[in-house]
Image (cartoon, rainbow over all chains, first blue to last red; front, top):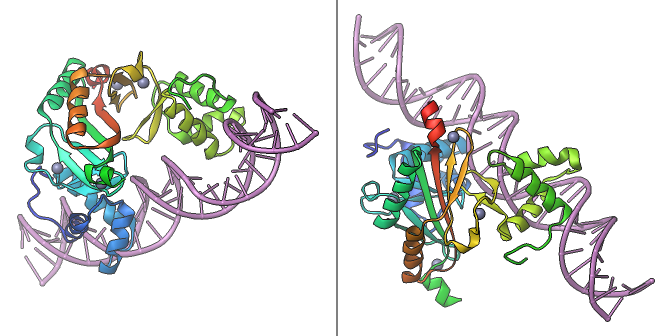
Length: 134
Length: 134
DNA sequence: GCCGATATGTTATAGTATAACATACTATCT
DNA sequence: AGATAGTATGTTATACTATAACATATCGGC
Ligand SMILES: [Zn+2]
Ligand SMILES: [Zn+2]
Ligand SMILES: [Zn+2]
Ligand SMILES: [Zn+2]
């Protein structure tokens, strides 16, 4: 599986489609339920598609939610470490990259001889709109 | 429950004890199994103790592992956002805080009107020792 | 002692993820 | 076409993580 996925299988297309149309992160089982009408029957069908989509960078797993979201970041993989801000009210996920954060964490990793790393940065709270709404 | 926990209940003591002696993060069920000999019987006993310990800052939840670790950071709660580097080989967890990372993320949060946030920063990979060992 | 608050015990169930095996599709070579 | 290898899919069963709901016990203040 390359960084830039060239073609998607039928199941991968359907899972990515479900996530792309969602207005909030979806759990694997929520995806399964949505795709039952399309013929999905069991969790492995969803998890296998998710595994490839995540590896290809088209979908991100939100560790603090056990849920998944379609990538919405321009040039996601070229901008250093990706951070997610997740609204617990409306499910809005803002995907962003901060050069200073990436640099500092990358340096910490190098200084401590960590290798083969995957970094998770997730901010959970209420977004501006939902904060105002109370 | 205050930020600085004054006294722990019997169950909280036992759960914290199990985590303090562990050399790697433990899942709630691993804690349960270890404490069965002390009389623990069911998951809620562990989860309830963990909830209080996490709220008090004596234990941290590692979101990317669904596991828990005793706090090992001096003045953990006074140093801004906490980051964790987790070795997938030996389970070593290095807890650290970087002022620049904290500042940049805190600014992003303020600039985007996020409120009531909890931030997760987790680096997963192989620690220096395990990298060398191959 | 009485009462409210907190802690604990217990059973059942919900939610998340993967192992294992069977079948089908696709591409390539002969 | 037929054989073969690799990938994708279907299916069943099970493992792992977390909480709801209710019962009982313990601790303090009054
Ligand atoms: Zn992305
Ligand atoms: Zn919102
Ligand atoms: Zn800590
Ligand atoms: Zn290690």
